[in-house]
Each structure stands twice: as C-alpha cells, then as structure tokens.
Length: 183
Image (cartoon, rainbow, N blue to C red; front, side):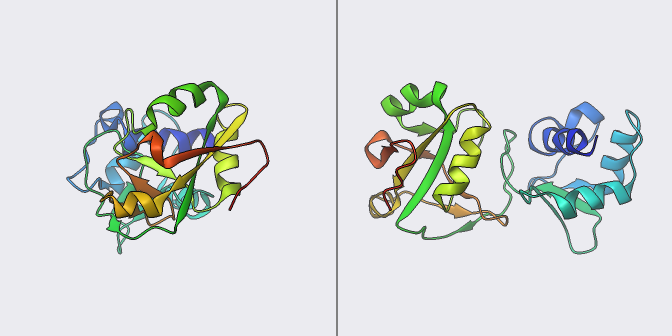
C-alpha cells in the first residue's frame, strides 16, 4: 500500500496534479494540505502517512519546504516547472542505466528526455545497473561528461543526488559490456 501510494504521489507531483484537483506553482510546489485532502478522497491518507513516505523514500523523490506546508518532487517532471536545480560541473564520468529494449534507440540517437524535462544520470555504475533493472535486463552506458562540459552542455544536480542534463548525444556515450565497468 505504501509503495503504491508513493508512486501515486510521484504521478501527482511530477506529471498530473489535476488527477486530485490540485496545482503546482512555478517551482513544482504543491500545498501539503491540498495534496493530503486530494489523496484522502480516494483512499485513507493522512499528513503523518505523507511525512513517513517522504522520510523513508529510498530514492529521496520528495522535499518539503522549511515549515512543511509545501511539497514537491525533486526531479522527473513532465510538467514544465523550475525546481531550482543547482548547475554544477559533473564528475568526469556519469552513468545511465536502462533496459535492453531501449538500447538500439540510444545507440543511434543518444539519450533524450522524451516526456521528462531532463535525462537522468547516475553518479556510479552500481546505481545505473539498479535503474536499468527496473526496465528489464539492464544495459549501462558510460557518459563522457568531461567532453560534454567542454562542448558547453550544462548539468544539474538534484537535491537527492541525481545528475540531470537536457540530452546526451550518441558521440558522448559508450555502452558498457555486461558487468564490465570501465572506470
């Protein structure tokens, strides 16, 4: 139940706030009371349950403002919001994990954000493998972020440690053979 509720909150705060009749401000914030009330119309839900989900979410998907009157998803939006990401110089290599079914498209066109605002990249190989497993048999790509940054690409670091950029052209990616981390 808790996992399904967390996924429902992600849907609301990243993609479809209207499903429970709320809206997000320009920075992706929603009123906590409105979120709780909207979810409670569909299933039993309280502020305490929300705070527990935010506190225990292993991916750090959500943040409260200082007085816990507002909440937002940290990244992953398809709706146009500015979550006030911090522009940062990335480490020399980042990683992207996906499922095998997407590899041919990525090999040809690179990484694109599709319906999201940004491409999500991992700081380490192991996390990329875990992300890839969510989509089937994992495929991991090594991203040459040094070359990208030198060519003017901008990177952001979300508050939960996910690296974000608008796109990664194919010339900057290298498919990592199964279990063969190269750096």
